[in-house]
Image (cartoon, rainbow, N blue to C red; front, side, top):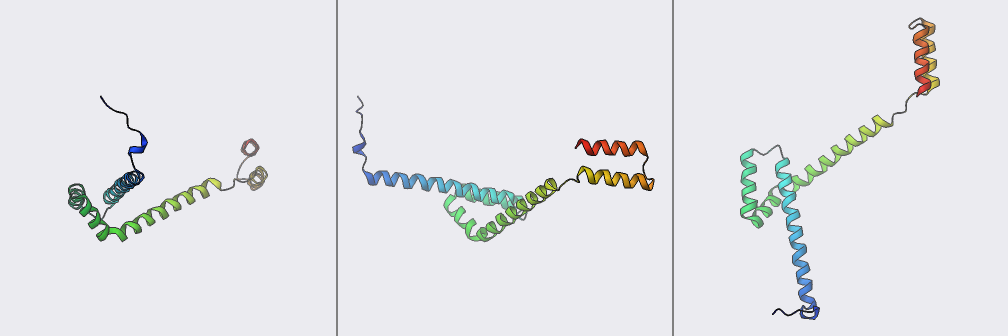
Length: 136
């Protein structure tokens, strides 16, 4: 017969140690995923190099991760910074392209009238441009 255990059988220091071990595992897996993600995004390492680092990280995890951080740690940060700057630049370009103000209807009609006066368009084209400008 199983006896129910109450919370008093698990001392506070054991609880703290369990929490430390849990968070250490979370950090470990986060570090492992970060390193593997960096490794497979790199274009300067061949497939054999990636396979070798992967085998080292999987079969000798602590040694592999520490070696990768020592050998490529600084470059990891530089690559992440470059990727973030590139993503920010793409976002800024997109926002600028979307936020560019459209010419007002009066400006469009004035340009159409100028084209009409120069003879570049006829009356029907002018009226079509005017309707289009007023519709927006």
